[in-house]
Image 1 (cartoon, helix red, strand yellow):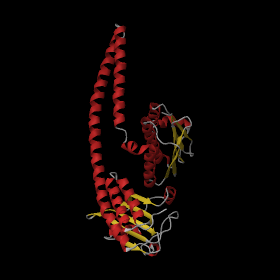
Image 2 (cartoon, helix red, strand yellow):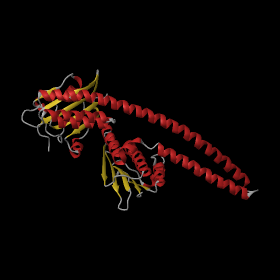
Image 3 (tube, helix red, strand yellow):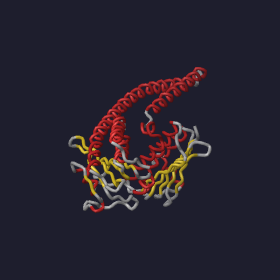
Image 4 (cartoon, one colour):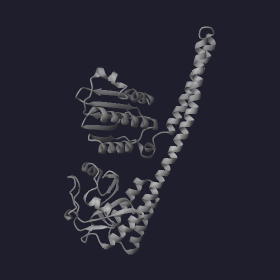
Length: 380
């Protein structure tokens, strides 16, 4: 369903609502989504998109509305800055076309891309800086995009520039705050744990000296060693909790994994995919362990396997918890070399992370048959 014709009052209310929604968003990604959804609804178009350019001829972010997640995945990698997309980034005003396919700058699109005809786009600018380009296609109704649509999109773009600039400033401010907080925590961690470890070493040395001539006192000292070790472990655990990756806290494990896989897929020649089946949320410590193991396994596969495909899957266990699998179709290695390769490939740290949350890590590999890293974590 899409909205029918609006009267002047309802149209003004819709514009006001859209501008207010933009101004209330703090995260850049949320601002982009709000701009695109608002533009598509207000101009009654079938499709809308907003691309934020990078410095390498591509787009750092590209948000669409009107295209399903499945079709978006089928379309493939993010577009490059070419054709009509490039024109929108480098011209001053809007571009309105009755049929984008007939424009000499049109260079086609992937097979899975939806068919588009009438087109309206313009850059989003802050002074001389181009923050992005906003596009709409397939106006519903017989007339196509109008002068009024151009005026409305120009108004949206002006407010979008303000909202995007504010969101960028907010994120930079937050990054600085996080960096300062992590620096503070690092100093506190160093001071607290260093003192505990120094006391631990002295107490252990005293216990060793007393073992033969005063076993009772040696036993007391060893009990003190155990207490100091427990305190040091608590300090470390508290610090790790505070330093937990922000993306997990904000987006959760599934979204964080999906985003990281998407970035790797676009950055490497190997095809990297992510599939999730039934997993919603896990306890914080388990999400941290799963993410770190996935990152290490992906790093190994991309750097060492030489494979053409890497598949990441996260599935729900019937008894609760989840199973992470990272599989590649690369060179693999024979079972006798697994132990020797373990430290080189980070398997020791991955097993430690698994054990730390009561999980289990297994490695399946054969020469020329690829490798699968599997992490199973129990329910919380």
